[in-house]
Amino acid sequence: MDSEVTALAARVAKAERLSILTGAGVSAASGVPTFRGADGLWKDFKPESLATPQAFARDPKLVWEWYDWRRQAIASCEPNAAHRVLAEWSRRFPNFTLITQNVDGLHERAGSRDVVRLHGSIWEVSCWQRCAAAPPRWRDETVPFKEIPPRCPHCGGVIRPGVVWFGESLDPAIVDRATEAADCDVFITAGTSAVVYPAAGFLELAKRHGAYTVEINPETTPATSTVDLALQGGAEVVLPRIAEDL
Ligand code: BV8
Image 1 (cartoon, rainbow, N blue to C red):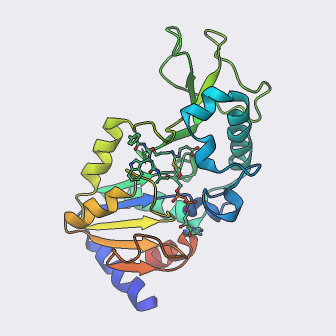
Image 2: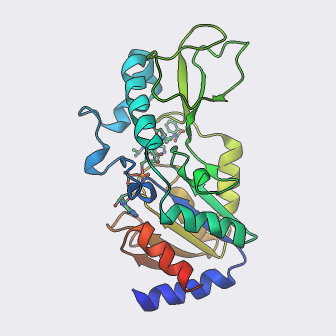
Image 3: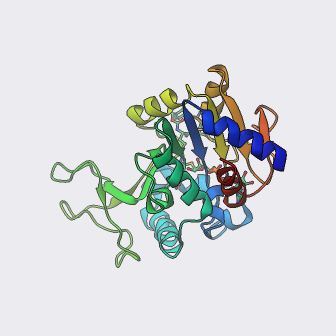
């Protein structure tokens, strides 16, 4: 791996445009449960079955118990070396874009700015009734919520987490930023199982733009055989090694 990391560092150092896509794996070393890892399950519910508007309509209390559990877990975590390296790169490289599927906010807590959050933030909420008095979404870092499901301060109805659920479309403006960032020299995907779309499609788009593509993951994924370089290891280990060689 050393020679591959050194060669990659040389490419990153001279890249005009550098884009990164992250998933739950980059927060694993911080102790945040991943989706598909053994720790991803909650009360034997598969995340996909809870992260849908149908599940919320059916049982907002159950879905909020899950999100409140995740918020408590995330609030007790700290960004790790992977988050810190990417924050440093966001200051160092002029044309740098960090695209994330994560809703945990650890990239921002590490100092990353202008993160392209494909799936929203677990620290934002909105009124489920979309009442006129409420803003489209607002930040709420209450941990734990005193009342589950928590209520809209404007209409007394329930509020929902500010995340994109399965079956819901992503914000077109955010998809445009990610699409634009796929037109780059080096595209690194780190800590994702590459099964959720449209997020997993940006790697393919970068390849079509001729970018040098890299995957960082201790396991193989559907993307492993498609990238120019697959580095099998933890993001909190591999990213600092690349940074050292820059
Ligand atoms: C949509 C927010 C229009 C909520 C999330 C095309 C083909 C097939 C299906 C579809 C398709 N297009 C659309 C779909 C449907 C669906 C989809 O992709 N389904 C999948 C399951 C097949 N997509 C959607 O519904 C999207 N909306 O397309 O709208 C539309 C609507 C209807 C029908 C058609 C089109 C919305 C998707 C967003 C859902 N919301 N999150 C919340 O967080 O609660 S997705 C959520 O799951 C995460 O955000 C993330 O995206 C995904 C989890 O994936 P990962 O982050 O990769 O995490 P995972 O645990 O899976 O893997 C971790 C990886 O890290 C592993 O590989 C592991 O080895 C590695 N790892 C572990 N430790 C480390 C590590 N790596 C590095 N270092 C370590 N230390």
